Image (cartoon, rainbow, N blue to C red; front, side, top):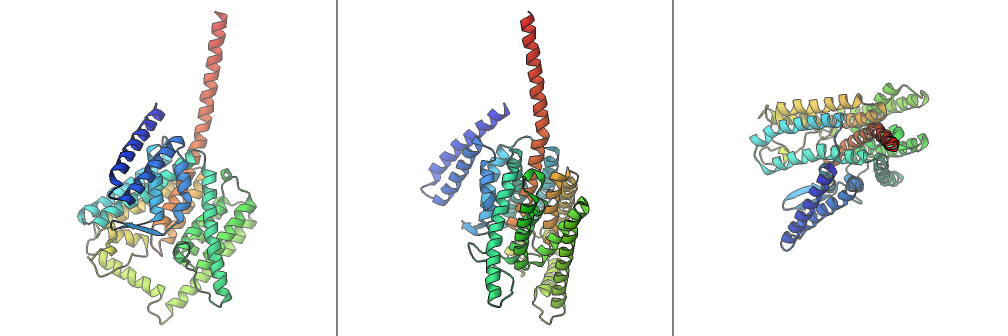
Length: 440
């Protein structure tokens, strides 16, 4: 009954979408194209719930931007929005863990409504919706893929995409090194990629490759090879916060598993070496006379952020306030807590910390083959955001898509014994009924 209702809703959506396309084509062709893509997505999702989300996964890595009617968004956001609609509309019954995460997201979004009401400007409203898609939308997209049994394929597609990015990074880094330059790698092709985006994205996917849960079907050698490849990409990016985040995620994994001692000890040694490298770079910058290096610049931004927050400590000054003319400052605070504190005040910060700590607690309590990877990617992202921006497109959506995939796979596996039990019960009852009829 529910299946028929969902298909009926999808059909009505397709009809309405077609009418909208016909109406707006003459005056606004770009909008018509966007609506057409949405209509196509709904149609394909009526065939298979996971088709569009699975198809969109490589697009989530594209940070190139598009602009329309004054709204500037990344291609990753567009792809995520397109996949979110069918993922939510045709979603199966949520598992307890999935529902708990959605409640945490709802709590955070509710807390930020106060700053939207207190600071009425368009960018504030748009960013609130954007946050909902980055968190809840990404979670539903991953959930729909995992719940339909495509979790292993989804993670493989994402790792393949990340490996391709790492290839470009390594080529660029090696080429520069051959010319005597050992600067951090920034990519201009096929689209612009900042070193911190490269480091964070490859670092998160390196965690996936290292963990490669059993249900992925990857061998240990393949997982370690892809992990090494992505780690080299992180090293070429020279993103210190990404190196720290990856290292902490690996150490937490080793402390939890306590198995295969040779591999963990080697990883711990590599992590300690990476931490020493980061520490030496930071100490060098701290002792430098250059007041404009990244170390001193961050200290200045931290101080300026506190100054901005003090103008509205309870509700904050609004989401994406750095794009307004309210303040002379034009920077996004390079720290998750300060970013939320300035934007949504104390209320928003408390809800944000509940979201992160609550998510980690829920995921950590799940069966390790599903919860460990999910918890580690969220932890990695949170650690990285202690030294860099948090609310940026791919870096937020990527870990929550992975979390959704893990939860979907777990829910699918949990439902299988029940389905088998129900089927066997029906088979037994039918055989009993048949024997009764024969006896009569």
